[in-house]
Length: 422
Image (cartoon, rainbow, N blue to C red; front, top):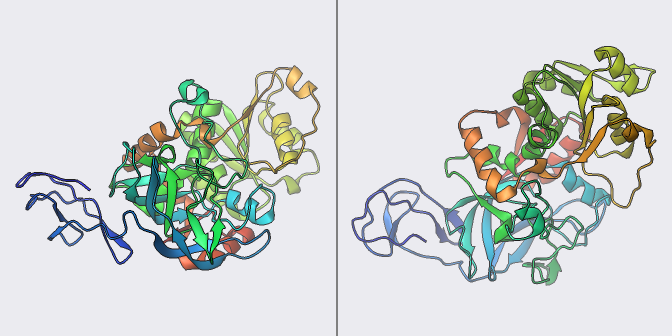
C-alpha cells in the first residue's frame, strides 16, 4: 500500500481487497489522511488488507493428468513467502505450450495449474520484495530474470537459471502454494495463470504501465514477445531480406510482424490451414503457401519461388520434421534458421550435417531472446505507443470458466489467440 502524508497531491491508489475481490484506481487525488486511501469509486477509506498474509480461496482450472479435461476447482492459495509475490490474474491467453502438458509432450507433475501468458495486479508481497508492491499491474514471467546468474549478466543471455522448463513444478523453496482437496497442486513454468490468484518469485514478475489493457497486454507475456523477438532480436532480420515463417498461429504471426518491423521485403507464410492466410497477409506477410499443394519438398518450392534467396526461416510449430525443413529452406551459405516452437520432450533430431557445414546458422530462441524483467515493460510501452497492434492476434475473448471452449477453438484451428478474462 502507498502511505502518504495528509494533503499530498498526485496520490495514486493501488489496491483494495475485500471478500476476496480486488479493485484498484489510478486517479490522482489528494490523500485525506495518513493510512487513508482512494479506491475504485474514488472515495476515501481506511486501508484494509483482509487477504494479506492469509490463505485465499478461489477458482482455478486444474489438470489432474494427461489427456484429461480441465476441472474448475476451488483451491487454496497460500500467502507469499520471502521474495515472493501473490497476484490477482485479470486476463490470460491460451498458448500451445499449455496444450503440450495436456498431451504429455511436455514434462509436468500432476495435478498442475498451467497457463503462463497473463496480466494481473499484485495483491500482496512477501518479505524482501523491493521491485513491486500491492496494486502494481504486472506480467507474470515464465522466463525469470534474477539479474545475478551468468545468463542474466551476459548481454546476449536470457535463460535465467531460475527457469523451470523441466517441469519441477514448485517454487524456489521446493514447495507449492496451491492446494486442492487437501492435495498439493504443482506450479507451471514459474507462473500458473489459469487461476484467479497465483504466487510467483519476484524474479518472475515485471511491473508494467498501469494503462495497459490486460486482455491485450497479456500476449506480451509469451506469444507476441516470443515471435516478434525471434525476428528482431534473435535472427536480427535485415532490411530488404526474404523470410519464410513455418506455422501461422499466434506466435508465427508475431514473427511475421517482427519481420515486417525489421524491414524484410518478402515474407512468406507457410501453413497447412489456408484459413490462416488472410490474417497473415493482414499483419505483414507478402504471400502464403500450403506445403500440401506441392509435390516437391518445401525447401525446393521456396528456392524456386525466390531464386534461392531466403535468408531467414522460422519454425514456429514445434515439430522435429519442420525444424529440419526450415533449416533446409534458408540459404545454404548465409541463411539463418530459428527454432521458435517448443520441441517435444525427450526426442532426438536427425539431419544431414552438410546443411550446417556449408555455412547456415541454426539458432534456438526462448522468449524471443528478451531479458524478461528489463524488456517486457519496454514492449508494453511500445504497444501503448501503437508501434504494433496486439489486437490483430486476438480472435476470441471468453470468460475464464469457458477455458475448455478456448482449447477446442485452438484444436479446431479457428482461433489465433483466445484470451480468458476473470
